[in-house]
Every structure is written in C-alpha cells, then in structure tokens.
Figure 1 (spheres, rainbow, N blue to C red):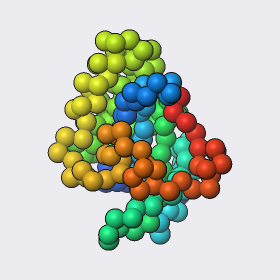
Figure 2: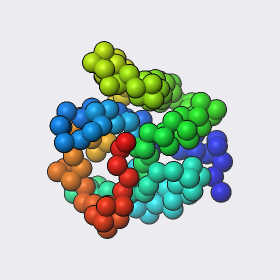
Figure 3: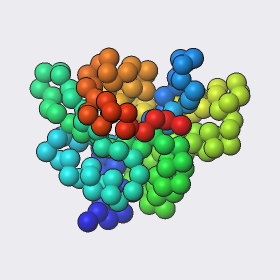
Figure 4: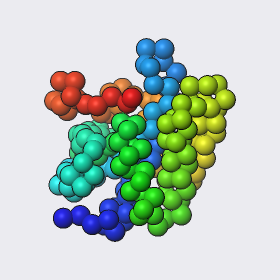
Length: 176
C-alpha cells in the first residue's frame, strides 16, 4: 500500500507537471494541463497502485522505438476537475521536496487555478498561462523525453506512441 511520503518521493523522481497549448481549431481546449509519471513496463504495478491511491487518471502503454529504450507505461491525469480536486490538493498538503519539482508544481497549480476561474478563455489570461508555463522545466535533462515533446505539441501517435486497446476504443479520457 502506498503512503503519501512514498508518492511524494516517486513524483519527485519520476513525475512531471505539464501544460500544452493547443492551437488547433478542431480542439475545444486551448490549455491542457497534465500530471504524468512514466515507468518501465516491469514497474507498471506501481502505476496501478498510484491509480488506486488517487482514484483518478489512467495508465497507458508507451512504446518507445528509440535504441536502448524499453517498453514503458505512464500514469496520467488530465481531467481538469481531477487535477483541481485531487492532484493539486494532495501536493499542497504533501509538498514535493525537490526545489525544481516544487517550482514546477507551483506554476502548474497557478495555471490550473487560472483555468478554473475561466481566465484562460481571454487573450490576457491565455498569455499569462503561457508565461507561467514557459518557466516550467527549466534545465530539464529530459529534452528527448516524450512528455517534453508532448509539451511542445508533438502528438504521441506521430512520435513513438502506439495507443493501447483502451485508447483505440475511445475509453481514454480527453482533456476537458
């Protein structure tokens, strides 16, 4: 059974808070926040436990065809209500310990709050969200990581992600 301290340590080491800005006219969401954690396939049990611990999100397969990379799974929460009511309060009550991760979370939290107030629907609010997001992940060593590429607007399917059967059947939650 996971404890709050274990979850904080796991997220400090392997988690990420990200915000994607969608320019597509076909998508209704222009600002898409996401909490994500990626582990090797043989560590998937931990992600399933994390899903059970929080009670929100999904676990997805993430194939990586790059040389010397193994099959991975990722736990992610991108539903705004779940982020606002579960993820943000958890990390406010149980602060991250790495200064860089704590900083990313604080910026993420501000963006989620801005979205909750509807400010992201105005030009000024959207610009504020972009400015906050631009301060996230400074000095990241994961420049080639799929999540970083996602933040830059590269679709998983176009890069290295083959959807699981759950995703292909339409069961994956879409950002709202």
